[in-house]
Structures are given as structure tokens and as C-alpha cells.
Length: 326
Image 1 (tube, rainbow, N blue to C red):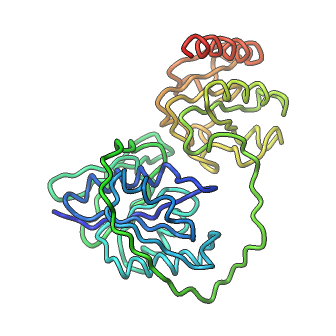
Image 2: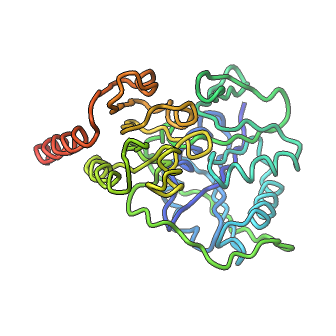
Image 3: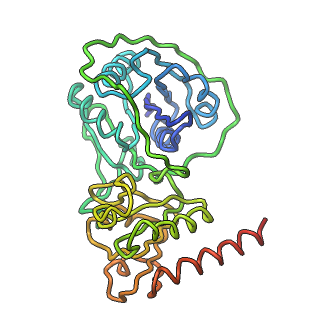
């Protein structure tokens, strides 16, 4: 069965977010010989055309309007609804990000479509699309399908492999004007936390600290290790509540959900709230003085010891390995 699949492309600071390319990979699995359409919002959309085409987009809608330069719920919802009405897709993929979690349910209800959120895998069984997603704070997985009608799905970042770059065949470019009115929110200023590094939600390596880090200075040790590994810094809710770091680094049920190739938990006891945000990481390393800490139950490798002794040793060893391979 050939399907028309629509992707909402997300960008950040002039770069494509990986989850948009992961969404194209998911689209290729279900489209068969159908069309894959990518919708890019904002005046700088043309700079992403080549990469989207290389990864499999057949048609790229360049959606421009003065009110789409910064995300607002009203603006994006109105614009994306008009794109959907024009394209008439069978399936829509968005990232399971702040934007996707805001837009998908709103538009799915308006259109009367089914919605599967936080998808970690997509497959076909005959002509039916099967969506795998975690439940019970990541303790189990369920497989869902929409019985009838069209489908919205949000893709959890860093779970569906990005496809290989293909020989670029020219995609169709479709400039698309939208009418946006009655915006209830005015963005006066966007204040971004200086991240200095890798996007936490898309990082392949995450070094995370808990209350055992004991303060802001403790996170400097973790940052040095993360920099050596090309990774990002994360934190437990306990560390954020203790004001050791900003809440933008919080990983857990009420924070970010991450699925890196390597997750290093330093001084984190392993509360259920935190485990829900990182338990699907491919390899988990736990460093904790308490051999009975719950984090060791989900870890692939455990180091019982003082993180202030262990982390600097790891950092030095990784530096040696890195220099030896240069």
C-alpha cells in the first residue's frame, strides 16, 4: 500500500534537528512507493533542502510567514493545518519534542485522526502500521495500531536510525503561503540557556549528575568528561532542586527523556522518576558510593566508588584513548 507521509521539520539555531531526519526514516518504512513530504517553516527553509532530499524527502513545502519565525502554538497550528489540508497525507510524523507534543494532539483532535505518541519504532505487518512505544515509565513496551482513518505519530528522538545519505535526486520545491490571524501570544524575547555543546535530547553520550555531585563545582568534573566524549550534561531532579544546575538539564519523567548510546550516571541514586527518563539508553554506566543504590539495577556496568575519584580517572583514560587514535 502506497502512502503519502508528511513530516514537520524542526530546526534549532540554523541546524536541522536529528529527529526530523529520523522521522523521514520512519516515513520511508511506511510510505512504500508513496510520497514523502517535508514541511519547513520560516524564511530560511531553502538551506535545508539538500539534506532533506538526500535523506529521502520527495517534496519540500517551504512555508513562509512573518509569524512563523518563532514558535507559537496558534501560528504553527494554523500554518500546519493549512499544509495538511493542501497535502492530504495518510500519515503525519512529528518529533516527540516540545513542539510536537504541543501540536500533534491539538491538530489530531481538530481533524479527528488517531494519534500515537512517543514512538520508538515503526514497522509494517501486511498493510498495517505498527507503532512501538514505552509504557509504565519505560518498564514495558506496547505495540499499537490505528484501526481506521489517518494517523498522527510523534517520534522519540534518538531511537529510529537515520538512513544513509542517498544519491540526491531533485526534490520538488513547493513555496506555500499561509494565512495566520488571531495570534494570542506575542513573543517579545527569546532567552536561551547557553548550552555550549551538544543538544541534550539528541546527544549520543550523556554524563548526568545527581545529589552526590554536591554542588555546582561537581558538575565541572562531569562537564570535562562529557567534553572528552563529545557528549552533553544532564541531571537528576534532586540536583536541579538543590540548585546545583539549571532545570533545563533535568532528565526524568517530568524532565527530558534521553536515549543516548552511552549514559553515565554520577551520584544518582536511581529514583523511578529519573529512571523513566533514561532507562532506554543503549549502555548505562552507574557510579555511586552506595552498592545498594537502585541505579545499579538498570545499569549495564557499575562502579562502586566516590565519583570525585572515579570521574577524573575516567576522564584521563578517555583522553589517552582519544589522543592515541588521532
